[in-house]
Image (cartoon, rainbow, N blue to C red; front, top):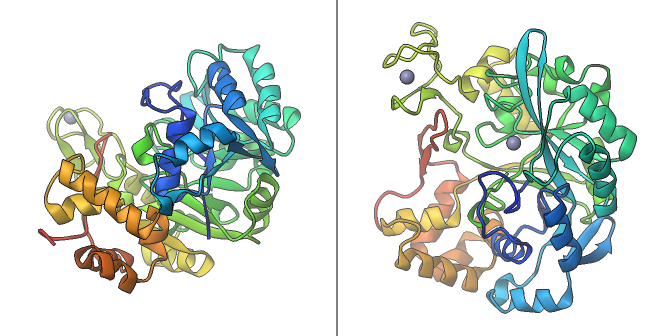
Length: 414
Ligand SMILES: [Zn+2]
Ligand SMILES: [Zn+2]
Protein backbone atom coordinates (compact mmCIF):
# COMPACT_ATOMS: atom_id res chain seq x y z
CA UNK A 1 0.00 0.00 0.00
CA UNK A 2 1.22 3.53 -0.82
CA UNK A 3 0.48 6.20 1.79
CA UNK A 4 0.34 9.76 0.48
CA UNK A 5 -0.07 12.96 2.49
CA UNK A 6 -1.12 15.55 -0.07
CA UNK A 7 -1.79 18.54 2.19
CA UNK A 8 0.93 19.79 4.55
CA UNK A 9 2.55 23.14 5.28
CA UNK A 10 6.05 24.57 5.55
CA UNK A 11 7.47 26.93 8.16
CA UNK A 12 6.46 29.80 5.86
CA UNK A 13 2.74 29.33 6.45
CA UNK A 14 0.93 31.23 9.21
CA UNK A 15 0.99 29.52 12.61
CA UNK A 16 3.30 26.65 11.63
CA UNK A 17 6.38 25.20 13.34
CA UNK A 18 9.67 26.99 12.55
CA UNK A 19 11.20 23.50 12.43
CA UNK A 20 9.41 22.62 9.19
CA UNK A 21 12.25 22.66 6.69
CA UNK A 22 12.66 20.15 3.86
CA UNK A 23 14.90 17.73 5.76
CA UNK A 24 12.73 17.73 8.89
CA UNK A 25 9.70 17.06 6.74
CA UNK A 26 11.46 14.11 5.09
CA UNK A 27 12.55 12.62 8.43
CA UNK A 28 9.06 12.97 9.94
CA UNK A 29 7.41 11.38 6.88
CA UNK A 30 9.93 8.51 6.88
CA UNK A 31 9.22 7.69 10.54
CA UNK A 32 5.51 7.85 9.89
CA UNK A 33 5.80 5.65 6.81
CA UNK A 34 4.40 8.19 4.35
CA UNK A 35 5.70 7.30 0.87
CA UNK A 36 4.70 10.49 -0.92
CA UNK A 37 4.44 13.79 0.92
CA UNK A 38 3.22 17.12 -0.44
CA UNK A 39 5.72 19.95 -0.55
CA UNK A 40 3.02 22.26 0.82
CA UNK A 41 3.26 26.01 0.18
CA UNK A 42 4.67 25.52 -3.35
CA UNK A 43 3.69 29.09 -4.31
CA UNK A 44 5.83 30.66 -1.57
CA UNK A 45 9.03 32.14 -3.07
CA UNK A 46 11.44 31.23 -0.21
CA UNK A 47 10.03 27.73 0.22
CA UNK A 48 10.11 27.22 -3.54
CA UNK A 49 13.78 28.20 -3.51
CA UNK A 50 14.55 25.70 -0.72
CA UNK A 51 12.67 22.96 -2.60
CA UNK A 52 14.70 23.73 -5.73
CA UNK A 53 17.97 23.53 -3.83
CA UNK A 54 17.19 20.33 -1.91
CA UNK A 55 15.19 18.22 -4.39
CA UNK A 56 15.76 16.56 -7.74
CA UNK A 57 13.19 15.02 -10.14
CA UNK A 58 12.28 11.36 -9.56
CA UNK A 59 9.81 10.85 -12.44
CA UNK A 60 6.05 11.32 -12.93
CA UNK A 61 5.98 14.66 -11.11
CA UNK A 62 7.74 13.35 -8.01
CA UNK A 63 10.94 14.61 -6.39
CA UNK A 64 13.53 13.12 -4.07
CA UNK A 65 16.08 14.65 -1.72
CA UNK A 66 19.44 15.20 -3.39
CA UNK A 67 21.98 12.51 -2.40
CA UNK A 68 23.98 14.55 0.11
CA UNK A 69 20.92 15.70 2.03
CA UNK A 70 19.42 12.20 1.80
CA UNK A 71 22.52 10.72 3.45
CA UNK A 72 22.34 13.36 6.18
CA UNK A 73 18.68 12.58 6.93
CA UNK A 74 19.10 8.79 6.70
CA UNK A 75 21.86 8.98 9.31
CA UNK A 76 19.30 10.30 11.83
CA UNK A 77 16.77 7.51 11.18
CA UNK A 78 16.59 3.93 12.41
CA UNK A 79 17.50 1.47 9.63
CA UNK A 80 13.91 0.21 9.60
CA UNK A 81 12.71 3.71 8.57
CA UNK A 82 15.44 4.53 6.07
CA UNK A 83 13.11 4.52 3.03
CA UNK A 84 12.83 8.24 2.36
CA UNK A 85 9.57 9.67 1.01
CA UNK A 86 9.17 11.30 -2.37
CA UNK A 87 7.71 14.78 -2.77
CA UNK A 88 4.81 15.98 -4.90
CA UNK A 89 4.19 19.69 -5.51
CA UNK A 90 1.21 20.97 -3.50
CA UNK A 91 -0.22 24.11 -1.99
CA UNK A 92 -3.27 25.35 -0.16
CA UNK A 93 -4.97 28.58 -1.18
CA UNK A 94 -7.60 30.58 0.69
CA UNK A 95 -10.32 32.66 -0.93
CA UNK A 96 -12.26 35.27 1.05
CA UNK A 97 -15.10 37.10 -0.67
CA UNK A 98 -18.77 37.98 -0.47
CA UNK A 99 -21.36 35.95 -2.33
CA UNK A 100 -25.14 35.82 -2.00
CA UNK A 101 -25.08 38.26 0.91
CA UNK A 102 -22.57 36.35 3.04
CA UNK A 103 -18.83 36.44 3.63
CA UNK A 104 -17.26 33.26 2.24
CA UNK A 105 -13.97 31.80 3.37
CA UNK A 106 -12.95 28.68 1.49
CA UNK A 107 -9.69 26.70 1.45
CA UNK A 108 -8.60 24.74 -1.60
CA UNK A 109 -5.76 22.20 -1.85
CA UNK A 110 -3.97 21.96 -5.19
CA UNK A 111 -1.65 19.17 -6.39
CA UNK A 112 0.59 20.05 -9.34
CA UNK A 113 2.12 17.87 -12.06
CA UNK A 114 5.50 19.40 -11.11
CA UNK A 115 7.21 22.37 -9.48
CA UNK A 116 7.39 24.26 -12.79
CA UNK A 117 3.60 24.04 -13.05
CA UNK A 118 3.37 25.53 -9.56
CA UNK A 119 5.69 28.32 -10.76
CA UNK A 120 3.28 29.14 -13.59
CA UNK A 121 0.43 29.53 -11.13
CA UNK A 122 2.63 31.55 -8.76
CA UNK A 123 3.41 33.94 -11.61
CA UNK A 124 -0.27 34.36 -12.38
CA UNK A 125 -1.47 34.70 -8.76
CA UNK A 126 1.55 36.77 -7.71
CA UNK A 127 0.13 39.58 -9.82
CA UNK A 128 -2.98 39.59 -7.61
CA UNK A 129 -1.54 39.22 -4.09
CA UNK A 130 1.75 38.99 -2.23
CA UNK A 131 2.73 35.31 -2.19
CA UNK A 132 5.63 35.91 0.22
CA UNK A 133 3.47 36.88 3.20
CA UNK A 134 1.93 33.46 3.91
CA UNK A 135 2.66 29.94 2.63
CA UNK A 136 -1.10 29.56 2.31
CA UNK A 137 -1.91 32.73 0.38
CA UNK A 138 -5.30 34.43 0.64
CA UNK A 139 -7.04 36.00 -2.34
CA UNK A 140 -10.14 38.17 -2.52
CA UNK A 141 -11.31 36.06 -5.42
CA UNK A 142 -14.49 34.11 -5.94
CA UNK A 143 -13.64 30.38 -5.58
CA UNK A 144 -15.02 29.72 -9.04
CA UNK A 145 -12.70 32.37 -10.43
CA UNK A 146 -9.71 30.83 -8.63
CA UNK A 147 -10.56 27.44 -10.11
CA UNK A 148 -10.85 29.04 -13.56
CA UNK A 149 -7.37 30.57 -13.19
CA UNK A 150 -5.92 27.25 -12.02
CA UNK A 151 -7.47 25.37 -14.95
CA UNK A 152 -6.25 27.97 -17.47
CA UNK A 153 -2.73 27.92 -16.07
CA UNK A 154 -2.28 24.23 -15.15
CA UNK A 155 -5.08 22.29 -16.89
CA UNK A 156 -4.26 18.96 -15.26
CA UNK A 157 -3.80 20.23 -11.69
CA UNK A 158 -5.78 18.29 -9.07
CA UNK A 159 -8.05 20.83 -7.38
CA UNK A 160 -9.44 19.63 -4.06
CA UNK A 161 -11.81 21.59 -1.81
CA UNK A 162 -9.97 21.31 1.55
CA UNK A 163 -11.43 20.04 4.86
CA UNK A 164 -14.88 20.60 3.37
CA UNK A 165 -16.85 20.66 6.65
CA UNK A 166 -14.83 22.92 8.94
CA UNK A 167 -17.00 25.82 10.09
CA UNK A 168 -14.82 28.74 8.95
CA UNK A 169 -12.85 27.57 5.92
CA UNK A 170 -14.66 24.55 4.52
CA UNK A 171 -16.72 24.85 1.33
CA UNK A 172 -19.66 23.24 3.18
CA UNK A 173 -18.83 24.73 6.61
CA UNK A 174 -21.60 26.13 8.78
CA UNK A 175 -19.82 29.47 9.33
CA UNK A 176 -18.82 30.75 5.90
CA UNK A 177 -19.45 27.92 3.46
CA UNK A 178 -22.20 26.82 1.09
CA UNK A 179 -25.03 24.28 1.16
CA UNK A 180 -23.56 22.36 -1.78
CA UNK A 181 -20.35 22.24 -3.84
CA UNK A 182 -22.16 23.56 -6.95
CA UNK A 183 -23.13 26.81 -5.20
CA UNK A 184 -19.44 27.52 -4.76
CA UNK A 185 -17.81 26.44 -8.03
CA UNK A 186 -20.92 26.74 -10.25
CA UNK A 187 -20.40 25.64 -13.87
CA UNK A 188 -16.81 24.52 -13.14
CA UNK A 189 -17.85 21.97 -10.49
CA UNK A 190 -17.48 19.05 -12.97
CA UNK A 191 -13.72 19.79 -13.04
CA UNK A 192 -13.54 18.71 -9.38
CA UNK A 193 -13.37 14.97 -8.68
CA UNK A 194 -12.05 14.75 -5.14
CA UNK A 195 -12.78 16.45 -1.82
CA UNK A 196 -10.78 16.39 1.43
CA UNK A 197 -12.55 14.91 4.46
CA UNK A 198 -10.79 17.04 7.10
CA UNK A 199 -9.91 15.77 10.58
CA UNK A 200 -13.40 16.15 12.07
CA UNK A 201 -15.16 14.08 9.38
CA UNK A 202 -14.66 10.60 7.96
CA UNK A 203 -15.95 8.81 4.84
CA UNK A 204 -18.95 7.39 6.73
CA UNK A 205 -20.12 10.91 7.58
CA UNK A 206 -19.56 12.19 4.06
CA UNK A 207 -21.48 9.31 2.49
CA UNK A 208 -24.60 10.47 4.35
CA UNK A 209 -24.83 13.25 1.74
CA UNK A 210 -25.84 11.83 -1.64
CA UNK A 211 -24.82 15.05 -3.43
CA UNK A 212 -21.19 14.13 -2.61
CA UNK A 213 -21.38 10.58 -4.01
CA UNK A 214 -19.43 11.34 -7.16
CA UNK A 215 -16.39 12.73 -5.31
CA UNK A 216 -13.45 10.53 -4.37
CA UNK A 217 -12.30 11.14 -0.80
CA UNK A 218 -8.84 12.43 0.05
CA UNK A 219 -7.46 12.59 3.58
CA UNK A 220 -4.35 14.49 4.54
CA UNK A 221 -2.64 15.72 7.69
CA UNK A 222 -2.80 19.49 7.02
CA UNK A 223 0.27 19.34 9.28
CA UNK A 224 1.50 22.57 10.85
CA UNK A 225 4.47 20.80 12.46
CA UNK A 226 6.61 17.67 12.00
CA UNK A 227 4.71 15.74 14.71
CA UNK A 228 1.47 15.59 12.75
CA UNK A 229 2.77 14.65 9.29
CA UNK A 230 0.74 11.66 8.04
CA UNK A 231 -1.86 11.71 10.85
CA UNK A 232 -4.37 11.38 7.98
CA UNK A 233 -3.43 10.13 4.51
CA UNK A 234 -4.74 8.80 1.22
CA UNK A 235 -3.96 5.22 0.22
CA UNK A 236 -3.09 4.20 -3.32
CA UNK A 237 -2.63 0.79 -4.90
CA UNK A 238 -0.78 2.18 -7.92
CA UNK A 239 2.83 3.15 -8.54
CA UNK A 240 3.47 6.53 -6.88
CA UNK A 241 3.31 9.47 -9.25
CA UNK A 242 1.28 12.52 -10.17
CA UNK A 243 -0.33 10.98 -13.25
CA UNK A 244 -1.08 7.72 -11.45
CA UNK A 245 -2.59 9.51 -8.43
CA UNK A 246 -4.67 11.77 -10.64
CA UNK A 247 -6.03 8.81 -12.61
CA UNK A 248 -6.73 6.90 -9.38
CA UNK A 249 -8.67 9.80 -7.88
CA UNK A 250 -10.54 10.37 -11.11
CA UNK A 251 -11.44 6.78 -11.99
CA UNK A 252 -11.07 4.87 -8.73
CA UNK A 253 -8.62 2.42 -10.32
CA UNK A 254 -5.55 2.39 -8.07
CA UNK A 255 -7.30 4.32 -5.29
CA UNK A 256 -7.00 2.55 -1.95
CA UNK A 257 -9.07 4.58 0.52
CA UNK A 258 -8.11 6.79 3.43
CA UNK A 259 -6.28 6.79 6.74
CA UNK A 260 -8.29 8.76 9.29
CA UNK A 261 -8.13 9.96 12.85
CA UNK A 262 -11.33 9.36 14.80
CA UNK A 263 -13.50 12.31 13.76
CA UNK A 264 -14.19 13.09 17.43
CA UNK A 265 -10.46 13.88 17.73
CA UNK A 266 -10.92 16.79 15.29
CA UNK A 267 -11.18 20.22 16.84
CA UNK A 268 -14.47 21.05 15.16
CA UNK A 269 -16.47 17.86 15.72
CA UNK A 270 -19.05 19.10 18.22
CA UNK A 271 -20.72 22.50 18.62
CA UNK A 272 -19.08 24.65 21.26
CA UNK A 273 -17.42 27.72 22.69
CA UNK A 274 -13.79 27.34 23.59
CA UNK A 275 -13.67 30.44 25.84
CA UNK A 276 -16.77 29.30 27.77
CA UNK A 277 -15.66 25.66 28.06
CA UNK A 278 -18.85 24.55 26.33
CA UNK A 279 -18.71 21.56 23.98
CA UNK A 280 -21.75 19.47 23.10
CA UNK A 281 -23.36 17.34 20.44
CA UNK A 282 -25.97 18.87 18.14
CA UNK A 283 -29.14 19.32 20.20
CA UNK A 284 -32.21 20.80 18.50
CA UNK A 285 -34.00 21.42 21.86
CA UNK A 286 -31.16 23.56 23.21
CA UNK A 287 -30.78 25.69 20.09
CA UNK A 288 -27.50 27.11 18.78
CA UNK A 289 -26.78 29.63 21.55
CA UNK A 290 -24.11 29.24 24.22
CA UNK A 291 -25.61 28.56 27.67
CA UNK A 292 -22.77 30.56 29.27
CA UNK A 293 -22.42 33.73 27.18
CA UNK A 294 -25.62 33.60 25.14
CA UNK A 295 -23.81 34.13 21.81
CA UNK A 296 -24.09 31.70 18.87
CA UNK A 297 -21.98 28.56 19.29
CA UNK A 298 -19.42 27.51 16.70
CA UNK A 299 -21.37 24.85 14.85
CA UNK A 300 -19.35 21.66 14.56
CA UNK A 301 -18.97 19.19 11.76
CA UNK A 302 -21.28 16.55 13.31
CA UNK A 303 -24.09 19.13 13.35
CA UNK A 304 -23.37 20.40 9.86
CA UNK A 305 -23.24 16.91 8.34
CA UNK A 306 -26.57 16.05 10.01
CA UNK A 307 -28.08 19.26 8.62
CA UNK A 308 -27.06 18.49 5.03
CA UNK A 309 -27.47 14.70 5.17
CA UNK A 310 -30.20 12.88 3.28
CA UNK A 311 -29.14 9.45 4.62
CA UNK A 312 -28.93 7.97 8.11
CA UNK A 313 -25.62 7.46 9.92
CA UNK A 314 -25.74 3.63 9.53
CA UNK A 315 -26.41 4.02 5.80
CA UNK A 316 -23.41 6.35 5.47
CA UNK A 317 -21.27 3.79 7.28
CA UNK A 318 -22.35 0.89 5.11
CA UNK A 319 -21.87 2.88 1.90
CA UNK A 320 -18.41 4.06 2.92
CA UNK A 321 -17.25 0.58 3.87
CA UNK A 322 -18.70 -0.94 0.71
CA UNK A 323 -16.90 1.47 -1.58
CA UNK A 324 -13.51 1.85 0.04
CA UNK A 325 -11.06 0.95 2.79
CA UNK A 326 -10.94 3.25 5.80
CA UNK A 327 -8.29 2.89 8.51
CA UNK A 328 -8.96 4.90 11.63
CA UNK A 329 -5.95 5.45 13.87
CA UNK A 330 -4.59 6.93 17.04
CA UNK A 331 -0.94 7.97 16.64
CA UNK A 332 1.79 5.70 17.97
CA UNK A 333 3.23 8.33 20.36
CA UNK A 334 -0.29 8.84 21.76
CA UNK A 335 -0.84 5.08 22.23
CA UNK A 336 2.54 4.74 23.98
CA UNK A 337 1.75 7.77 26.13
CA UNK A 338 -1.50 6.13 27.23
CA UNK A 339 0.21 2.79 27.86
CA UNK A 340 2.82 4.45 30.07
CA UNK A 341 0.40 6.88 31.68
CA UNK A 342 2.74 9.75 30.83
CA UNK A 343 2.78 12.68 28.40
CA UNK A 344 3.86 11.88 24.85
CA UNK A 345 6.79 14.24 25.40
CA UNK A 346 8.03 12.38 28.51
CA UNK A 347 11.52 10.90 28.17
CA UNK A 348 10.26 7.33 28.73
CA UNK A 349 7.62 7.65 26.02
CA UNK A 350 9.99 9.27 23.53
CA UNK A 351 12.47 6.44 24.12
CA UNK A 352 9.75 3.79 23.77
CA UNK A 353 8.65 5.41 20.49
CA UNK A 354 12.19 5.36 19.11
CA UNK A 355 12.69 1.74 20.15
CA UNK A 356 9.36 0.66 18.65
CA UNK A 357 10.22 2.25 15.29
CA UNK A 358 13.73 0.76 15.37
CA UNK A 359 12.34 -2.73 15.89
CA UNK A 360 9.06 -2.64 13.96
CA UNK A 361 9.51 0.01 11.27
CA UNK A 362 7.44 3.04 10.28
CA UNK A 363 4.21 3.87 12.11
CA UNK A 364 1.49 3.58 9.46
CA UNK A 365 2.60 0.13 8.37
CA UNK A 366 2.92 -0.94 12.00
CA UNK A 367 -0.55 0.25 13.00
CA UNK A 368 -2.31 -0.95 9.82
CA UNK A 369 -0.44 -3.89 8.31
CA UNK A 370 2.01 -5.54 10.73
CA UNK A 371 0.69 -8.86 12.13
CA UNK A 372 -0.19 -8.59 15.83
CA UNK A 373 2.08 -11.54 16.60
CA UNK A 374 5.06 -9.58 15.29
CA UNK A 375 4.14 -6.55 17.40
CA UNK A 376 3.50 -8.81 20.40
CA UNK A 377 6.96 -10.31 20.14
CA UNK A 378 8.37 -6.83 20.76
CA UNK A 379 5.74 -5.31 23.09
CA UNK A 380 2.71 -7.29 24.28
CA UNK A 381 0.84 -4.27 25.65
CA UNK A 382 1.28 -2.43 22.37
CA UNK A 383 -0.02 -5.43 20.42
CA UNK A 384 -3.10 -5.49 22.64
CA UNK A 385 -3.69 -1.76 22.10
CA UNK A 386 -3.24 -2.09 18.32
CA UNK A 387 -5.69 -5.02 18.30
CA UNK A 388 -8.28 -2.83 20.06
CA UNK A 389 -7.56 0.07 17.73
CA UNK A 390 -8.02 -2.08 14.61
CA UNK A 391 -11.43 -3.11 15.93
CA UNK A 392 -12.38 0.47 16.75
CA UNK A 393 -12.53 -0.22 20.49
CA UNK A 394 -11.73 3.23 21.85
CA UNK A 395 -13.24 5.79 24.22
CA UNK A 396 -13.97 9.11 22.60
CA UNK A 397 -14.22 12.59 24.01
CA UNK A 398 -15.20 14.93 21.20
CA UNK A 399 -13.39 18.13 20.20
CA UNK A 400 -15.18 21.48 19.70
CA UNK A 401 -14.50 25.09 18.67
CA UNK A 402 -10.73 24.66 18.20
CA UNK A 403 -10.19 22.20 21.09
CA UNK A 404 -8.93 18.75 20.07
CA UNK A 405 -10.92 15.73 21.26
CA UNK A 406 -9.33 12.85 23.13
CA UNK A 407 -9.34 9.24 21.99
CA UNK A 408 -8.26 6.58 24.48
CA UNK A 409 -7.24 3.12 23.33
CA UNK A 410 -5.63 1.65 26.36
CA UNK A 411 -6.79 1.76 29.94
CA UNK A 412 -3.94 2.07 32.41
CA UNK A 413 -0.33 0.97 32.30
CA UNK A 414 0.45 -1.96 30.01
ZN1 LIG B 1 -7.04 24.93 5.39
ZN1 LIG C 1 -20.01 31.19 25.02
